[in-house]
Image (cartoon, one colour):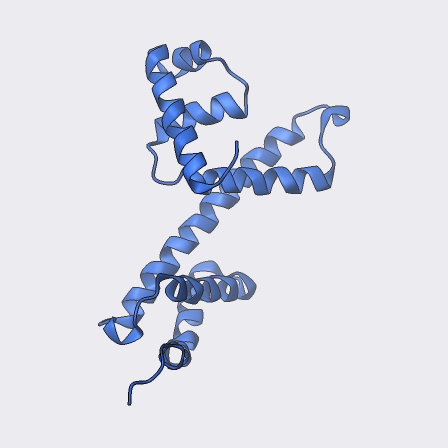
Length: 168
C-alpha cells in the first residue's frame, strides 16, 4: 500500500527539520529568523509538489532552497535599510508615518521580488523611474544608455511586474 503524499511529507519533515533548523541557524545567528527560513523551506517544498521519495539528497535539496531564502532575506534587508536611510534624510514634515513606512517597505519588497531575475541595469532603470521619478532622458544620461534602451528596459520591468501580480 502506498503512503499518501501528506504522510510522506510528514516523515520527510520529521527526518530533516531539526538538521535544517541547525544548518540555517549557523548562517543567520537568529533563532527566530532560522525558524522562519526553515518553515518557508518546507512550504516551498510543499508548493513544488515534489515527491519526497524522488529526492536523492534531501539535505542538499533543502540546503539549496534555504540558501536562496537566506539570500533573498539579506537582499530585502539591504533594500529596506537603503530606503530607511533615504527617509531619514527627508525633512521631518515630509517623512511618512511609521505605518506608511511599513507599507512602503512591503511594497518595495514586493516589487523587488517581482523584478527577480532581471538584469541589474533593468532594475536600476525601473527604480530610477518609479522611486526617484526620473524621466527616461535623465535615466539614460545616468546609466549611459540611449533613451530607446531605457524605454525597452522599462517595458521589460513593467511586464515582469504585471506577470508577477505586483503593481508599481
